[in-house]
Image (cartoon, rainbow, N blue to C red; front, top):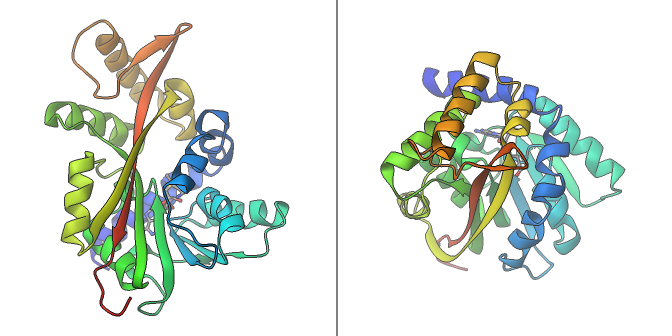
Amino acid sequence: MTAQSGDHTRTVREQFRIQSAQFEQQVGGIGNRAIGPWILENLPLSGAESVLDVATGTGLMARDLAPHVRHVTGIDVTPEMLQQARDQSAAAGLSNVTFDDGNAAALPYADDYFDLVISRIAVHHFADPVVELSEMRRVCKPGGKVVIVDITASDDPTQADAHNQLERLRDPSHTTALPLSGLTALAQRSNLAVVHTSEADAIRDLDEWMDLTATPQDVREYITTAFETDAAGGASTGMRAHRVDGRFKFVHHWAVLVCDTGKSGG
Ligand SMILES: C[S@@+](CC[C@H](N)C(=O)[O-])C[C@H]1O[C@@H](n2cnc3c(N)ncnc32)[C@H](O)[C@@H]1O
């Protein structure tokens, strides 16, 4: 691990220690509940798979997958998120889900181990996503699938920059949300071939989104001003800012990319 990636891991752990308090309620809440079934619809599952969920967080994706596969292993670097994952899995009575502590940049598993390797809304937190995606490919069996699920930015670089700047202000562990074309190129650089994509919108509430990260007041005011400017027809936030019943909302655009590993022997 380089000094830079070590610093980034500390930033991730600090951010998600904070977010662990409300993550289940907000990200697993009503507003996002449609996302889970939509992701499952896009996965080529037979029911016999051993799955790795990279950067599992509180295990929302792992728990969604559990009834449809043989076993799910979730892995994450933030202890407080993993504790929630273990508690929620136990509370749900799931016997085919286990969780490990570890870094996506150096996965503690043998080559060609899992049938399906997935990571949901985490690539935009990775220090150098080619490293993490290459690790996901390494531990995936020949003939298996690597699946990237992430929020995307606009294809317009000005809008994408505005969006990423606001995301980083609100959560310093955010590195870069890419447009779908950028995620596809990233997969290719990681020796993954995208064979299926799907996209969906999810509406988020601005204040709840900033509550989740305990965003400091001065940053909240800066981001809110950017939303006011956007909603009034000024500079775009790149986030499709709008008001509903007086509250600011925005759109997180999601993408699923199902990838072949290109390994021989599958
Ligand atoms: C936005 S949460 C997503 C959690 C989960 N995948 C979900 O969809 O609900 C991002 C998670 O990525 C984890 N994470 C970020 N970088 C990581 C890395 N290099 N290795 C393992 N986990 C990482 C964080 O600790 C956090 O739990």
